Amino acid sequence: MIRRHLGHAGRALLVAAGLLCVALGVLGIVLPGLPTTPFLLLAGFCFARSSERFHQWLLSHRWLGRYIRNFEEGRGMAPRDKAVTIGTLWLTMGITIVFFVPVLWGKLAMAAIGLGTTTYLLRLPTAPADDRATHRPS
Image (tube, rainbow, N blue to C red; front, side, top):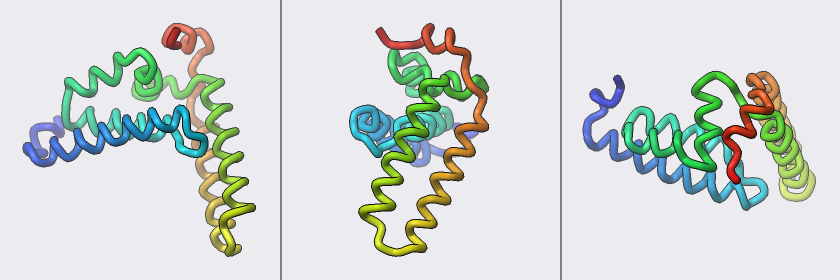
């Protein structure tokens, strides 16, 4: 596994990056415009390559684990998560493009990023609806 080839400093850096991504992902749950899923997936990536303990903690987390488990197992995203993610993406991108980006090339670049992200999300497998209920926090 990659863990053996990183060395102590590399593993520590990946653990720190993973913890930062978890924190940003949790903030993204309550702050509009800050994404949750990409940060949690990046945290899962960092932990899988640095710390089995942190990776298992994230996978088994009551609220956050579903995102990573579905992605790692190839089930993709739950339909509601896709819809909320795409809706939030375009709401925040639209507001930013209209009100905060003054130059045309910046507006076009943001729109292209939004389109690419939307295409990626739509192409992801959709997890069965009952799978979401199984892992949904109470």
